[in-house]
Length: 206
Figure 1: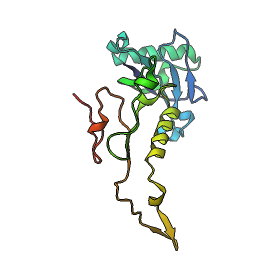
Figure 2: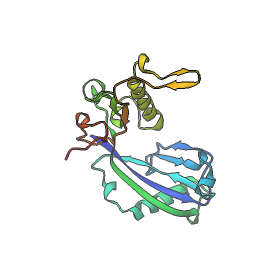
Figure 3: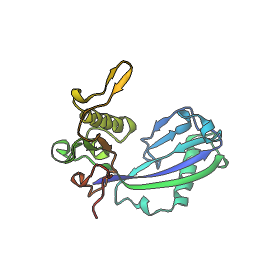
Figure 4: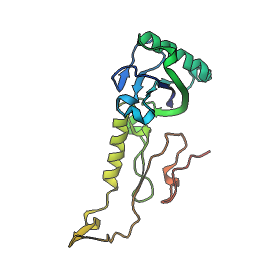
């Protein structure tokens, strides 16, 4: 079972605040966070404007999935006006709504021991990394990066096959096995790691 996400994004004429992430716990607010990318990324990247993501994580049967993009954007803009007194509807230059049904596997009792999918696949040094492997935390960049680093450490070849340097020149490795790959697979039901091939991405089963 997965949580999904609906995430309106707004391009604004001016920033909302000076914070990259504002987590929201108020049940009267229809999104779970205000992610202002231009507190982290140079606003010049967006023509001097501010880019804001407003995600809401949902169960599969939530009625919000059936609402239109226009309705969600209107609700989001009205809510921002309540939260930020200086914000005006005219500040919104553009908007988009992204929807992903399966984003984060819901951890259940005994999940880490009985349901947590392995990083390793049936192919030597091919790994699959996705949010289903986050058992003790929420979906975020830090957790995702930690999982990738973990697979990278396991994928490193043994010491005898590490490149060496002689006289300022790299000596070609003699490892007969193909280089490892870390497949960042989407967390979709039916993804079968054993079906991977060295030159293929993970395939979702019908």
